[in-house]
Length: 607
Ligand code: M6R
Image (cartoon, rainbow, N blue to C red; front, top):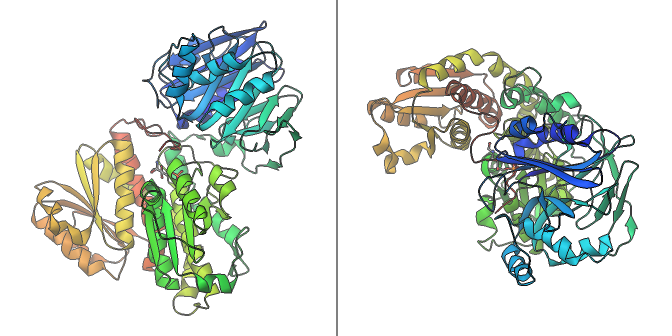
């Protein structure tokens, strides 16, 4: 999951690389490093811990001269976080330096192979075999050297490479790991993600797997695996630099929570045209949709929770059976797939390893794959048959907020789109479409009422455990609320289908247990109300989330959070905002590092 960056131009490279790494820190933050060409030599600085350590060590990069360099921020997979294990790694003679994102699966075999040839290894990383292979294969031709090295590697990689005999350029290559090339004015970049270089350019190219990019200050040349010079499509991003900055908010997470009304509005504007649902890159015939006998919705983490809401919505409105699966389970459980199944994969980053594998599994078995993704040009966006881009804009905090709500909304729009193709536009169809348009203002209302959540957080931030309960959509919400709280505050938070409590979990409830009861739907309100009563009777303190005006809960709940009232089906995006704010304020009160929770990274590119 690490972040890599490369620069070639006229400016001093190191400060620029550090600056770019700051925007990639969400990808990993246990160590970092940079390498530059300085006076024809490779000079390097690395530091364990947060990027600020490297910043101090190099005096903001000033200590390293040179106008060409590569940088890295690490999320350890092979070998503990340490100076030695941090990237860049250099070859035995110091002629090559490499930064790497991804996993070299056969690194032990290569290590053995090279050790037998007399190579010694300093680190415990898989990456060091890459740089030593470059050294081993180098007989004069750099392309042949890189090609032979790539042919030996199994796994995924995005690599930035410096070679001492090519001091005016650097090389970059990717396979199954994200890498963009940024084209500036007399300066060019590579990076794991667009925001790292957005300050310098909005013009990008996505190299294909195994293209070798040769980057210098004047331009970028791309060679495919047959060593033919190739052109790849250039695209412009419409995000501005500000969207990837904190803009006065103490954390990206809080900023991104506040951006949700706009993100949802943008998603609606992109998908509803003239009162009709129309997706830019999806055009299914009625015949195709009518033949569908099953949908699989596949994702990880919060995207999986969004998928649950999608399942309920699609089944209710389309009457097509929809299964929801964790990508890590789906890929190994031999799902029954054919041309009449549509597999919907959901991923904010578009780079989650398990979701990519699940997508490939589905494609291999003739299922069409529709991806709901936030990052244009990501692996999933490129490989899926059809893609809907959520319009959340760059999401920097590890805990997803606007990424999640735009996924929920997109799944609801997909449900209505499929219902339209099936001629099922009666019933609630028109009402849902109208209410979806009210979402931005309803979500804004929750944000405006954040003080209540702040007060609740100040009362309960000291608790060491919390339970989230709900039924139907509210159960999916409970799952998301608990994940949000645990990942950023480290409070042990668990979620349960409210009806399941009495089958075991209720034994955990004792005097003072904190229970967050989600009762935002009318249909199952009374049922969950009884469950809230059951936990209250056993001493729990209940915080209840309800639609405005649902006062029956007052007898059971210590605190009631009232939300703008929309149809049950449209409530999840609104309710999610209050759970996000509650988790945020609790984590802030506990003094947690909210944007960079321990052990986590934004995109999970390992299995
Ligand atoms: O990028 P993806 O949507 O595929 O990521 C999936 C999960 O890793 C992600 O949703 C994770 O659970 C979030 N950090 C939760 O806030």
